[in-house]
Length: 213
Image 1 (cartoon, rainbow, N blue to C red):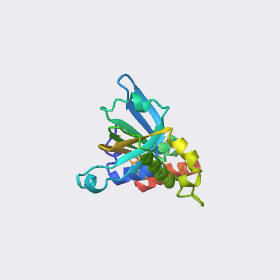
Image 2 (image 1 turned 90 degrees about the horizontal axis):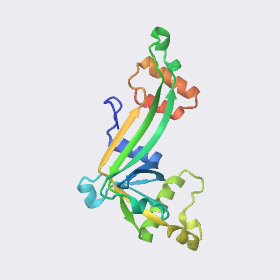
Image 3 (image 1 turned 60 degrees about the vertical axis):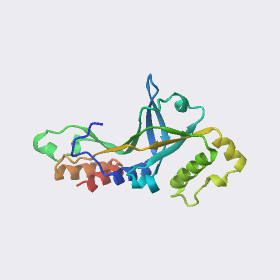
């Protein structure tokens, strides 16, 4: 990923927080003949015990439908790429006060993204798959007034559904991140961007711009 120094985000804890907040990943795999992209939610698990002491960077876990050919066609010797997209918004030149001074402004796009790389592993153990589904569900249901859990559904029903899944795990070898949020603009232009974003219902990106001032 092209990332000029002023947009680069290398703090692993910041990237992990983005994954937790925006877990729907674009998972890019190689079959030996072609690149394949699948969208699926992935849960970040920190390294623990021996893995943590050896400097491991945690893992991403998730599941796919058994009918999805990914688990049969992926070249497991080639690292996969998981892309997590955070807030993003079009930035109009009209939002820059400097436009009135010299007209030297152009449109752009602000965005926040985290990428993780590692080799894919499969899990067929029903207990592992159930635990992953339950953990991901708990993370996503945490904001609900009455959080739903896997145990709320009839066991026979969930057992049948879980049997149609294959678990996946990506031990992370590399994190990369990019926060392109108007850092290359003057304070005056950044303030104009925040004002324009708020007016355009882009409050999430407006917060990103403000946090990087």
